[in-house]
Image (tube, rainbow, N blue to C red; front, side):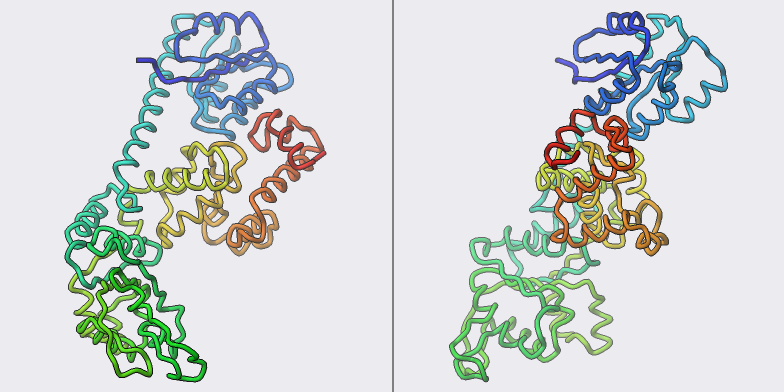
Length: 465
């Protein structure tokens, strides 16, 4: 079996050292790139995105520690081995604190070098294998558009499978942003009514005076403006499923008529006295506490019992944190395709920030955060700097960020994607980097964590000079 491909970049101002490293480490599955100039070495790293870097400590133009800081800023997951003929304990400790994986003395022992690199290669290939397993796990963790492998989600999937063939009405509860609409769609798809229509009514968006005519329809002349007969949503969903989202916002009068329609499986259009038979399954959803609404006389108890013969709860993301890596991968893959960007994943420190967040907005908030990050990212790895300010610095900085036009612009633009396109975002980031670097393309490329060639390509694309 061919080992997974791994890239290694060696940066040393002594060509003989680079030749020795290349000859000593040559093996199948390992691509070695070398540079005698630290700036050219950084360009190689931004372009090739290696997993391992061998780095000389003392070089002209830029020290090894300075290069190390740039590498860690670009991707802290890269394993960096520093090499030097001027070993001191203080420098070694500083290098490790700044993110180096190891520290070797010159002249380098070939045996020691091979052993250290082989260990890193083993670690890298294990991580690559873990990513492959994550991809395979993602495929096996899909269920009717939902992603999950936590016990709570497995239980939800199992209940949907058991209920779908038999239910006539169902109630889905859970916090906002947890995917109640996906559960409703899954119930429909797995039911005998799957060949019929799946019709959605957002109860919070319907004007109270129009609720009855929206659900049950009306006949010509029933009220001013009723110029012709109109079919209601329950009739339109005949043979399929009607999904009543946010049913907690439905007026009490309409609730009574809905209960009658569910009991008799018939509707009477506004202005008519003739009932019409319908064969429709009804799935209702709400993020509100229905027993509390009943206690406040805002929801009919009899309607609740009719709907809640089958009740499914969608768990918040805080109760299924083991699903977070799978959800991140799924959402990033989707946005990568949508934005036509090759986003490979999240750096480890970005994963830590996301793992520590409480996710009050659940999956919808996660989609917002990762969508923002995909738009902001210039390299193929999302780092902490690409995340919204509220996640990087905490909620207390949201107001302060408004005073920072750069950060506030990012947040506002993503909330209103139609205001600024992805190309506009990228062009602005490129322009800012070029301005801050005084037109120095190498410096601008390092700021953006991309190669000079890629910077020049994007400058030509946006006609930047």
